Image 1 (cartoon, rainbow, N blue to C red):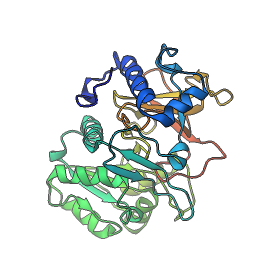
Image 2 (cartoon, rainbow, N blue to C red):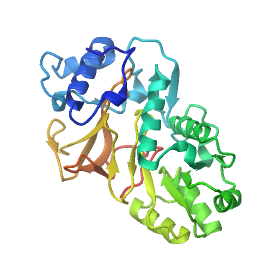
Image 3 (cartoon, rainbow, N blue to C red):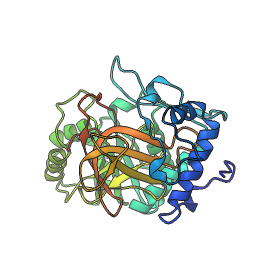
Length: 322
């Protein structure tokens, strides 16, 4: 049984993930009436679910049309970026400390101690969105770096290049796709000691291109061996990072399953399917989400993102088709 007061993501590993997932399922079934009703429609309950693959996955569209949360007090609401006229997803969060534990732990696992890094962000279209979970994450990373060059630089690309050249620390540059292309066109420069993390999204500013083409273009213009990428979304409190140019590595408390395109209750691996996500950081909303992304799951639990179902709308974070 879950004790929300002592819940700690660091206790979750590959060996005990399934039991933690079943415990979170029981907690959310008992305390989230929307999710309980959804499970009832599918005739699933803690008494009938014996393994985590049997847990019902809530369609991600519910975050646009319903308040997906348990009966605890809400401290914050993250909203998706969207475009004009789109209905935005809302993620009601009770415990921001849980979100911080999730992204700080995984980021440092991938890139090392934050205090040793210079964190730079070029996300021009996000700056007016005070409820963006991506902005909250990067702002917290900047604060933890405690480095005078770390910060948000919107679209001041000349200053970004200048800071990279002056920085005494390795640079982590977060950038939305169209801004990175704009910067690479204006300042095609060999970036030394720099890792670019592409967060996806053309935001209607440029024609969508496949991720592989984007990364090749940026690698050439910035003289980098590869471009990293982050897979995250408003509806999740965890992120997966791409470091080999192809597959994303989820944290221990996040698991991706791929459902058959023809049967949403059948799971496949090593072939294209719809991405279902278990994010155990989503304790107070819903940890079991059926996304509209297409992907491929590998035996080591890494995964690829291959695009989206045709009928789904374009999302704000990392929706480049590859």
